[in-house]
Image (cartoon, rainbow, N blue to C red; front, side):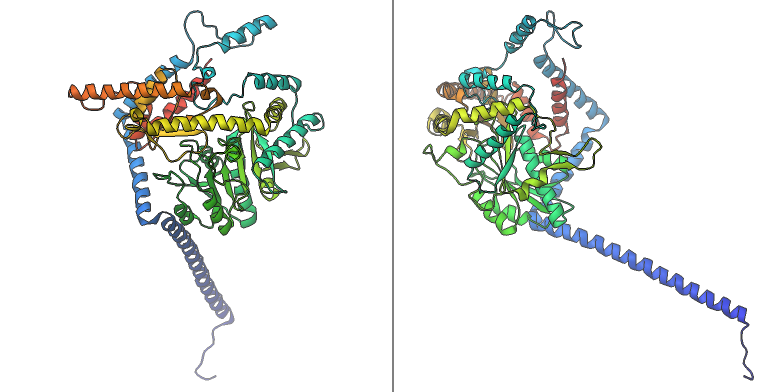
Length: 568
């Protein structure tokens, strides 16, 4: 065409290639921007979702309180790490641990310590002599009924029977059911007997464990795994009363489950159902209730939790480790009762300690499930291990068949009539102690019962005196009671040994309260104020612990205590 020009072919191709390159770069830039925007949008959506459920669960006020508490804890932790402060704190912690070691670990002339295997084995006579010596070491006299909980003794006759059962199954191990068929049979019958106590449906099931903590861990693991496989929950959360057993907190730490604690406020000290409902979100894998709880002996509103769990299609675990064989017997023994078991359709699992009020040897518990839909998620199965197909029902691999035999023997020896009789005695004694604190003016003026206990535990606080001084006063009289915190209180878990000395406990409590009041009056008369210097161990530990926003010092003390347990 006249007056027109055409680019050479090579230039035209170069130009087109450059255009394509620029367009490609622009498209790549657009794709990067788009990807960046999508990632940012997902990030915003993720945190908006988290914020929504935080505000839904805790509310604005509760969320502000959470932030304030966390900030205060962090700042106090930083303060404790300052050079001068850190040195002083470490010195005090070391002194406290040394004092504890002197109390727990025998030392001095004449104290024999075995730190390596004897070159030659001892004679049977020498072993028996040493065992007798160890059994007679100075200790709090649980045999005299002066220990709250701890030893759930079913009597000397039952203990002799348990010892005989041990002897028959010393080497038995349930991991080999073909080698020890009797142990397998007894274990299955233990689960069946306990299920029958809790009104379990026909397809209910369970396993035995080493104790309440393992039972609770297994229930939490099952709920987590079920939500993972059936609902693809990758960030599991659990909602539990602040009074629930600390094993649930251990489960959260072990299994990486986010924990939501719900207040149990006065005067009922039961879990707040409205707070539980607000905290439920798509990541919730388990609701928890206690029947009763360990600190105060209060049964949560299990009926309300059941309705909520059933409505939201969530598992509900009822911790009945402490209630064990007492709470199912309450109506049969004629005591007031609140529903808590599988009769409530929302209850999906229950933990029950046979080694508490079932009077079985220590190291026995059960975790029960409404059906295998829940139990199968606690199993561990390794199908491709070079050692063969491996399957275990709970945490342990090998387990002591002797303990299972001792548990089975205890259950069939006691029977329903034996447990009903024990319920009469134990709950009756709890009510005797509760009535004395509520009604006797020497006690009711300064002590207040927490909630309305129905089972075996009674807890009390004091609005006028330092409750930990009272705990130390009772300790000086040979009693070993449980000190509580948040709020500061004492609880008594009544056992059969305590039944025989309940009147003496009340009498000593009256005397100790009067002594503490006298000390207060003397200090006031001398113009020194109503609270003197901390003297007893309980007051020292819990008085300090309760005042610290950051518990790292308490953690260090607890670690020191655990370390001390393994010093020969």
